Length: 559
Image (cartoon, rainbow, N blue to C red; front, top):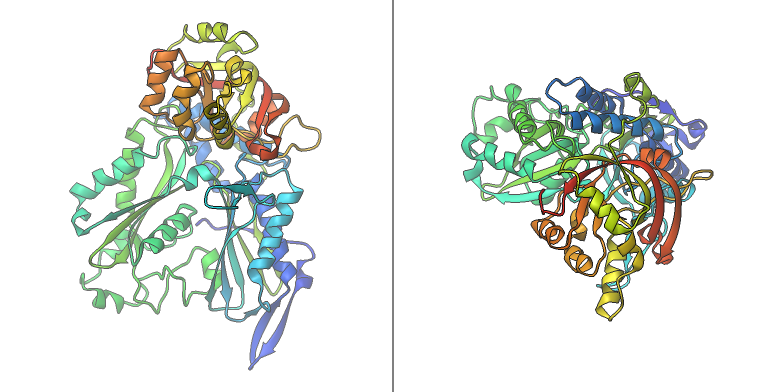
């Protein structure tokens, strides 16, 4: 994890004090300190990214092997970061699950209720800011209701040494979370001839639906499946970047675990026990009193990154920029199992380090000036083929038939927004003998749901959700004249391509990860058409201007 600068939250010094217990200093932390930490951390991370992440996006612009589409996506992501950094429109429409990892020094006293105080901060910021409520609570096994405050948060707290309380706060969207995968393998996979092609194939299956370029983490081993996956998630945030490299670990004198465990200073402790909280924030996770051994295989990382570039998937629309980086971590394992975990952090790489010490509450300083990375003269996007959507559907389809798959478009006119629950509601209506809504017959449908609308703007942040989740509805809807032009992100199934061929439909892709830019430059109006009780999952109608899109599936079934 990169070296970071931290800023003190003004006034937070009054929420901490130092006392003494059995001759040792103790940091006393008021519950409100935890609440303002969570509140401010998620406010920052929903609008801003790390400078190092933005620099990696900018590097695509000068990559000689990058495709024109790679550069288009990278420039769009930088422009999105610039818009979001003004703190009116969040980076992504999926403002995510609030995840808080905490490491509490043994000399920190709060009086209990830490999770409740942190949750209060999450609740506050999601109520005050134009963020989206994404959490659904079950009323029964089959029925759910949105909680209306984005709780519950996922909060995991551990005890460590020291007199600081350190945190990693992560806003995790559903798209990247859904790409987390676990493969229960055996010792047989542990050879270059088998492991490299295995991992290369798994990386290719990530596709584009979670908004690349990605930070990819692969974890091989682990004393349990759950440890493996948690390590993968933290590694995708850069949390374990301080592990020794494979080259440093290669001079161990023996493969015998007992011998390795006695080599002091070589084995970082993944459980973090015995590590000072301050070391975590500096990325120094080495432990000098442990038998838990782990390392990063930087050689394998380089091999897999090369394979990812060769895949041709690129930054969403073909090219080399599928991943910014790949981290491979090797852990100890039980002899009868070899779990392999895969996790990604998407183009909205939203995580922030925080700490509480005797001076108050500190937040990592994120990037407030992404504009510096945008080349002069590229502040606005060049346009593709102009398509007027305010015409009968037959005319829109006839226009799209003129162009091959891969053509870049510029869409202007009326679009319907409908996501998972709206599709399910419409399908239920059809099951009961109802009709396909006219709005799905007359207009293109974009799989999306906006955040809350900030004052003075036509719409909150809005961007495409993963298209594949709606695949099961396509054939039925198109057979009834609906969803003939679909807009979203990510790949579709062969069944969708076949349906488009049969019914003359099209699937258009738009750039994922640019929700703030979409709202600020392309949306002119927004109104709710149906199911208002569903909030962001309702059916909405928007009017757009010059929305960039690509033809990904045409009416001949070509992908």
